[in-house]
Length: 277
Ligand code: HEM
Image 1 (cartoon, rainbow, N blue to C red):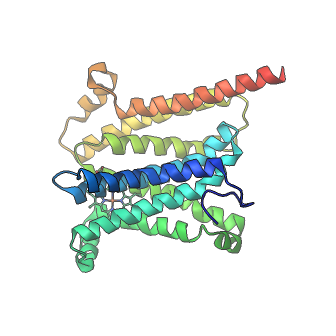
Image 2: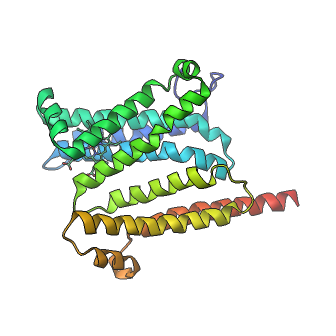
């Protein structure tokens, strides 16, 4: 079945848009590489871009369940598999580029994966993503039955955690992006453990609390990273969160995302109340 069609074979606008959106970064990167080049180290640039898109799409696939519920948008489920498979596609491209950069010397690649911890956890995440991809066909979902399939696919949170650790460990001193991803993962995990089964009454407020909790946890995670893994004064980094001159800090980006979702839920609830009188 074409990715842009629904189960009945009709053209689905939502799936068509999602399909174009997940393809766009890869196409853009390929065209940029071919037309203007990717700078002095094109493989490293492409490796980084594909890695970033793999993790972003993995997170987006995890965000479908909460967004579906919060925004009462059940159709979103139709694009979750596509987004997850796209994350796997970017991860495969990422690993393929790394292998190409090592002159296709697979033994060397395996040796590096064995020797470097950040590559080892990246590889475990990749194997996990592959397992989820293979078990995402209609046939496999049927064979595994709903409950077992759901249990297996819960592993996506563990894979996301490994991907964030891989991101952190290779970034070392500039961890803006991995910190943001860690904060978003804290939000997603907290949603799953705390709010997934909660009723919709008061959801805006609960989401507000979740957003603020994730903000604080993000700032603490960043502090922990700098304190434990670098010689950079972690307290100064923590204090930068309340210094407007320090620019947008990851914790504030998490606050922006979390509070936008909370505000969206609240507005939706108010609109629903106004409609029903
Ligand atoms: C066998 C598996 C993997 C290998 C060998 C690998 C290899 C690498 C390497 C060498 C880098 C550093 C690039 C540089 O020099 O800056 C990197 C960065 C990265 N990888 Fe992987 N990776 C693997 C799996 C994954 C997976 C499964 C994901 C995501 C789901 C991922 C996401 C990333 C991200 C986000 C970065 C950072 C990009 C940046 O610096 O902006 N990787 N990876």
